[in-house]
Image (tube, rainbow, N blue to C red):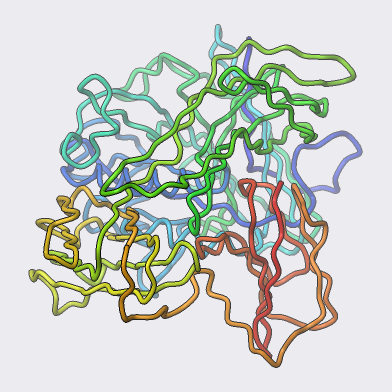
Amino acid sequence: MKKSIILIGMLMATAIAVSQTIVSTRPTQRNVLIEEYTGVGCTYCPLGHKAVDFCLSSFPGRAFAINIHQGMFATQFTTNWGNALANQAGVMGYPSATLSRHYFSASSMHIDPGQSYPCALELMGQEAPVNVAATVDIDPVSRLMLVKVEAYYPGNGPGSFNMLNVALVQNNVLGAQAGASQYYPENMVNGQYCHNHILRHLITGQWGDTIHNVSAGSFFSKEYAYVVPYQIGDLAVGNLEDLSVIVFVCKDRSEVLNVCEAVPTGDKAYIAYGAAGGEECSLVYRPYVSVVNPTLQPVTGIRLDVGGRQVVSGKTIAPYCSDTVCVAEYAIDDMPATHQQYGESLTVRLAGYTAGGSQVDIADEPVTLHYANADIYSVSGPLTLSIGYDAYPQEVSFSLAGIEDCQYYYQMKGSESDAGKTVTYTLSPANAGLYRLKLIDVGADGMSGTVTVTDGTGAVVFSRNAKDLLVWDSYYFNILNPGSDGPTGSVVGIDDPEDWVPEWSVAPNPTSDWLRINSDFDYRRAEVVDLGGRVRLATSGKQLDVSALPAGVYLLRVIADRGVSTKKFVKQ
């Protein structure tokens, strides 16, 4: 089957034509671009890859990556573009990254790759100044890539002009990588490291093409032709399906305003990816798949083969769009007597759908979903957590949250004075029950030695090498006896003043795409919060595009001068 690629990113400075376009004219939330600076000779760079991959898997369809092999450790996979990008980013060590080329500090856009998750959260809550979309056709014989790009400005864009960038990246490249087996062994394939998101070419040049008209309602479109060579630099480009195109629009040479990765498309719908699903304040998992409609016809009556049983979705997927379909529900109900590792998997295949009044049957390969992955320990309290700190303890934090009440009992962060020390913390929550211990090392270099948890008798319950606990690891402890310390705050961060109960509503509820806030009072900000307490979307307006969120229950909270008010909604 001949395949194309749908991108989300590009632009034509005229009024929108009557003919069909693929870019949305409705306000959307901002996607983010992680540009990671790395090299095959960099021992600690797999830590950065792991942190970035975690961010990408946490925000599918919202966060995208380009790995730029550049600098003293980059002995392979380099390009003509890397040095200028690194100089702009202010790279001083490896691994390094930028998040949408945004200045999170006054002096530099550089961040540690481990900070990509919280930085992404901050930017994705903003309304996108520009909507971007594009299609790409690749002829497998001539290797000619045709890219048609569009962009639309719902409001006035920032600055007097913007810059459009089209980047070609390569995935699934097996080769050498220093530190791979130690710091990212799960990314090894038959003894070799799997490199992804490698920058191969900037089709629009070092800093992109100029978009001259960025006023409200302006529309931009342009086509690019590029013949994919069989080798770029020292890297062969054999399998065209390993290529992706990432399109992003910048305010000038920095500050990425919106971005999306190319999605392979063709004449039939397909499953793009699957994810675990679930909520942080429960052990209920709802694995789902993202179904892409790459055609000009709406797709309905989606039929999935889920481990041998049929699941039919009532959703309609518009042309050149995608949506999520929940395929199962699984709950961990029984607590182990001591310790147990949980994990489930299933295979999902798109079996067919209806388009243009006709049934379409599909025989694509299935995808495998792994979910309900949890380590659970049953213990007597109080617990003692011991952390050996390295050079940057201020980048390390941990929290203990109750699963049943969604409350934080402890939220602690290392301090500079802890450098080189082993510090112990006593965890004695007031209620018996299940708790989630989350360990966070945003720089992947703040802990050394081991991280140990002992129970009330002094017996070691849990001990891990600190380098194996990277970025955002969670473990569960079923504490059998109550302690003395009560909760310190809600996981979902809701604190409504009792004397402020405003009249407002959210509709439609349930929803599969858009939410509208109906209120007769002014508020500063509205946020969509998952049940794990993470802000997933935000706006200062009256509507939110929630189509990219996994199916599940969420909270919508409005923040006004008088206080905070919250309502629950369901994303289908």
